[in-house]
Length: 100
Image 1 (tube, rainbow, N blue to C red):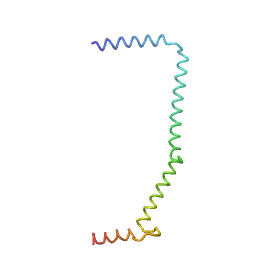
Image 2: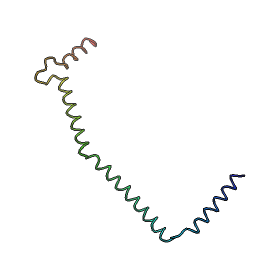
Image 3: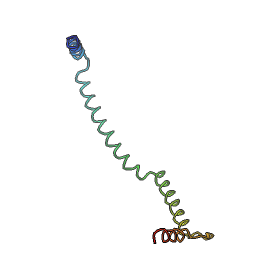
Image 4: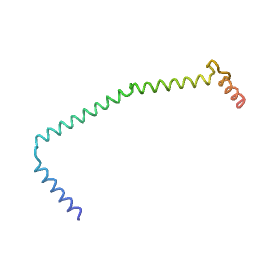
């Protein structure tokens, strides 16, 4: 019961505040402008997300990861010039012994 009375009091205060608010038409125009600007911000954020894929830092990270992967593959296949043991051969022989 008390909550219902509090709600009524608050509703009355809201109505009073709305009726005494200044700049009605100007406020409406500014609210519409605000809504348009918010839409523009969302569009620009989508565009930024598209460009992030081509970010130079991101491209550099991908190139670095590719180089590390290539070095790891070379290490396991024995392509490096001063590499004495062929890891791929060792793994292949182990598999043959383990699973005849």
